[in-house]
Amino acid sequence: MQEHATLTEVGVILRTSILLLAFTISACANDLPKDPNITQDADADADIGPTGDADADTDGDADADADADADADADTDVDSDTDGGPEIDLDEDGYTSDVDCNDEDASIFPGAVEVCDDVDNDCDGDVDDDDRDVGGPMGTFYADTDDDGLGDADTMVSACVVPDGYVEDSSDCDDTSPSVAGPTTWYIDADLDGYGGTDFITACIQPLGTHSTSEDCDDDDTEVNPSAEDLCGDDVDSDCGGEDDWTDCTDVEPADIVGTISCTDDAGPFTVYGDHIQINYGAHGMWWDTDVAMAGLEIDTTGDGDWVDVTYPGTHFDQLFVTRGPSSYTIGSPSGDSIDDLTLLCSTAVAVGDVVGAVHRYTVDGVADTAFILTKTEVWNTTDKSMLVHFGITHSILSMPSSFSLQRLTDPDQDFPGTTDVFFENPPGDPLLTVEGPETGLTVGMGRCSYRTRNGAYDGGGWGSLAEPVESCDPDGMTEDYPMTFQTNPILVSSGGELNRGYVLTIGTDLWEAVDDWDDKKVSLCGDLYEVGSSPIMFDDCGSRDDIPFEPVEPGVK
Image 1 (cartoon, rainbow, N blue to C red):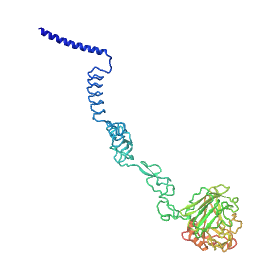
Image 2 (image 1 turned 60 degrees about the vertical axis):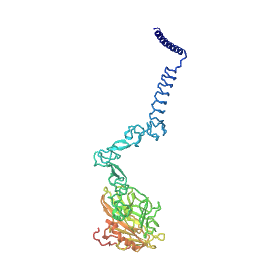
Image 3 (image 1 turned 90 degrees about the vertical axis):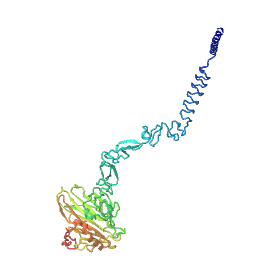
Image 4 (image 1 turned 30 degrees about the vertical axis):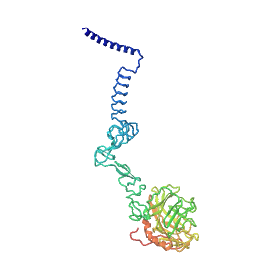
């Protein structure tokens, strides 16, 4: 028993000793200064884990995972992914390969602008149209509802690739009907002559001032279009046919255009050129003008450019008279404007086909403009040596019927300065009066179109006083410095009526060339003025006063 009690007591004493020792150590520890970084775990660090690091796990690093590196993942490298390897930024775009979906392209990274290039630019897993954040340039496509390949400009989307039901075109004029195509080409009619030129616009609906075809070869000229008449010899393809200037064209005669030329403004002095006839018109419209120092009528019978003055040298004389009842009026007086009492209303040069010339229109100065109007038209084909001189008098409808007569005196001096004389030839009854240069042979002829008119040499008595009809001298065979004269017989013109008369001026290297040209051109040049019958030529002092036959009546000619 004793032994047993002793063993028990010994165990109690040992347990008690151990507790006392632990208490003593704890008491001693509590008496020491305390470090705030020291926790109450079994290792030597400042946490409560059993290892010597500063975290709560059992490894030896300073993070909270179970591996031995310093990051928070469970692998053994120093980055935050789980692949076990270190990460770098190869393209230096600020994003490492763990987040950069293409670390070899600096333009691709999270947050980059998504563009249409079949690449995931922003690394969000969506490419081009699948990415709602596409921010780069996109194509515009138009709805093609009727499936005709043309899109509706009013219905469009932006996308990288053409969506189903859309096309790149936006020109469909009606996207509900496949039979209606895109816009039409319309050609602008700039001169408004009914034909489109070469300039165009495209539109679904035809704009005003356009046509569906381009046929006008000169859209700045209303006189040039496919329906225009193409005139020969004017170097203009008026009908846009493409032919040369003398093929499929209308050959215009001077008589055809009398009365058709508009005259509204005074063109002043001007010159009209032909190959053989050239006229420098003065400010008054006659064939001389000292104020502008121009030659008047000039001729070149050979076409070699050797022009000869006819009416300007020597005596500058080309004068026109009109009688109305007992009164006479004049224009072109060599005594000056103070004598002229016909007022120029307008003047214009003429160029129609190969016909050139001039129109001058006059009325009475100081009398109501409605009294009468005189129109002088002088026209010729550019290649010809003969020209038509036409006079038209229009009587006012407000005036009483009156007797009218007209006279023109023109002094030819083609051999000046050698002489101012000319040799006259006018066989009795012949409508052609010729004046020939006695030194050069150059000839100017005056052929009257009607037996109702007279021509001859004026002998200077009164110089054109038309209070009474002038009786011209028969000049046949005479050489004098006289003007050649054309005069109409007095005729009663009713109110609102017209009087039309005229003659042909022809030229030649010699007398016979001028006669031949007159014979060849008289009918076509005179036109409606040409009429034959008995001529009432009255001679002053060198021939019979009896009527002299004019010419036999030609069939079909008035």
